[in-house]
Amino acid sequence: MSEKSCTINKIYFEIHDKDEFLKLNYEYFNTLSCVYKTSTFVYENVLYYNIHMDFTEGKLNQIDFNRILDRFNEFNKGSIIKKAFYKFKKNNEDLRLPYKNIA
Figure 1 (cartoon, rainbow, N blue to C red):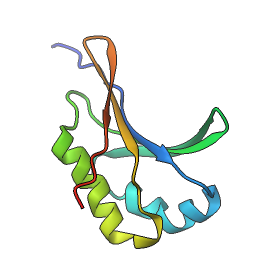
Figure 2: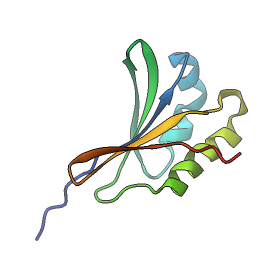
Figure 3: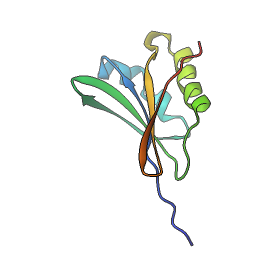
Figure 4: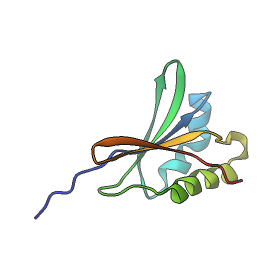
């Protein structure tokens, strides 16, 4: 039996108020079937929201990544995401896809 390895898959974007964002949106992202957990982090004095995806193998494609954030933007007009990234590992290389808002 072969052992499957987990991949790095996460969506991240800038937020301005951690408490307010979590109050309004924690449930939204944590109820998506592909989400393992969510967290926040600070990088170079910028606060980010991090969505860890639960994949044993594979990754999101650009269309699915855009769809997740487009639906969030439709759901929550008060906190529209304009810039986000999807980070994943492929052949031991970290890759990043930018969010392309189609709205």
